[in-house]
Length: 162
Image (cartoon, rainbow, N blue to C red; front, side, top):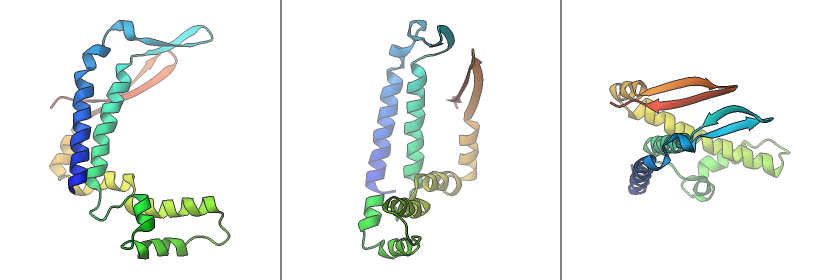
């Protein structure tokens, strides 16, 4: 992992700690918001739900950073890098004849994503970098909860204290 990635991860973990430390300001029944449709309450949510989702998002982006290949470059770097010229030229040669500019951009982005995309980095971290024991610990620390509030289906995940 390079120095920049390490710093980005530390910054995200600081943000997670800050958000979590503010949770007491967002508790209480008085903050519950209701979904109203045609004058009928159809469900409810609490603002902390969004903070919870933000925490998970920030933590999951660390997986992407931890799984990035040492050869990773941002898309603009891939387009301009002399080191990536062969990859880029192969992508350009594979553009279908008669493609319009938007299709060309999509094609190049698709080729970039196949080598350097977030999904690839995320999966690489979980499947290739974590040990089997670490992966089992990760999987066992996640619980998916499904419920229903009125007519609205609710799904969220929760972490389990280890």
